[in-house]
Length: 196
Image: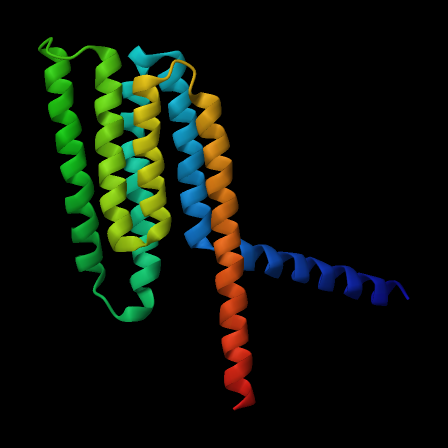
């Protein structure tokens, strides 16, 4: 009898694992993590605008790595050369790093202050993520829009963190609902194809 019980437990574990795998694929996990990192950055921008530029600068390689992983997984089955993938992503994100370096040049020459430097880096990151989303899919597109809205919130609202936390939760729920809807639609199409 104990063997039957262990088989049932392991089958439940496999079922839970496959359920999580269906709900949270690579294309859902990475944008959700980027949104969470963005919320942290928004909080830093809200509570310590002078230090926010350091955080957003640190997020550039994180966002670049996330996009490279997404591009790599998307192109894996399409026969694209890895050199092309790496070159395209490097050009996009190195362009951002160069722009951020120019913003720091403006900071160090006294043309910008720390607070505005953080906002400009956030703007550049939002724009680059938006462009990456055009190429890699709507999820990153949404993250770019979210970052742009965060910039607007940081500019006009005093206490905007809680508003964007709520918006981020709504965006995650929309991700999950769209994933579920797309999964149900694909399942129905496969069922119909099997009947023919």
